[in-house]
Amino acid sequence: MKFSNDWFEGFKPHLKNILKTRNVNKILEIGSFEGAFPCWALENYPHIDFYCVDSWENSEGYQETMDRVYKTFCKNTKNLNLTVIKKDSRDGLLDLSQNHIEYFDLIYIDGCHKPDIVLSDAVLSYHLLKTNGIMIFDDYLWVDRHREHSISHSPKLAIDSFVNSYFNKLEILSQYDIGRIYVRKK
Image 1 (spheres, rainbow, N blue to C red):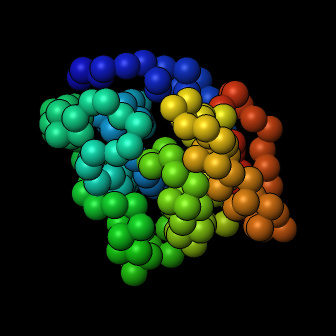
Image 2: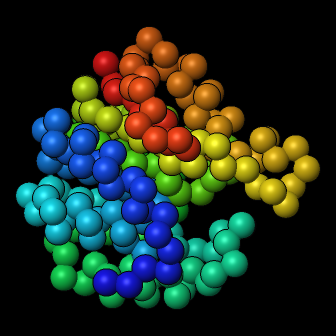
Image 3: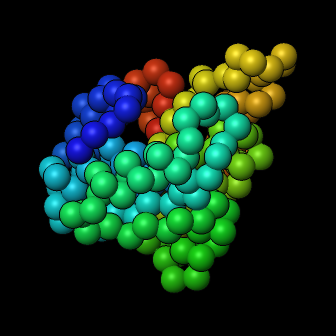
C-alpha cells in the first residue's frame, strides 16, 4: 500500500481506542481519498463491514489530480472486502438511506470541506447511524488560507451548526485529538 501523506497516522491510536471499547461492526467513511482508513481497519479488524463514499472528482483546495488519487485508492484497496460508492456524498448517502437506516456503528466524515456539504453529510449520516453509534468529524479546525474570511469556508461552521441543532440527540465525547470532533448518537 502506498499513501502520499501521513494524515491518517495520528488518528490510529484514537481509532484503536474506539474500536477496542465499542462493538463496531459497520463503518461508513465519507471522503476516502487514497484509502488509508479502510486499509488499516480491515487489516486489523477484518470482520468490519466497511463502506466508502467518495466521488474522487476534482475538489477546490487540492492540487493533486483526483484521478491519480482514485487510482491509488483502487490499488491500495483491491484485495479488501469493502463497498465503494463512487458518487458525491449527498447522492451516495441518499442511496444508502434507502436500505441502511440506523445501520452503521461508526461514521467518519472527511469529505468536502465546504460548510453546506459538511452539514448535509452530517444530517444525512445521522439517520444512518445506530443509537450509541459514533460520528467523527475530521478537519474541525481546518481553514482555507487562500480566502479572506476563511471561517465561512470551514467545516467548523457546519459542525458547530449540526452539533447545536442536534444537541439533545448527541453526546459530545471528549476530543480524542485536536482537529476532530467525536459525538455519540443518543
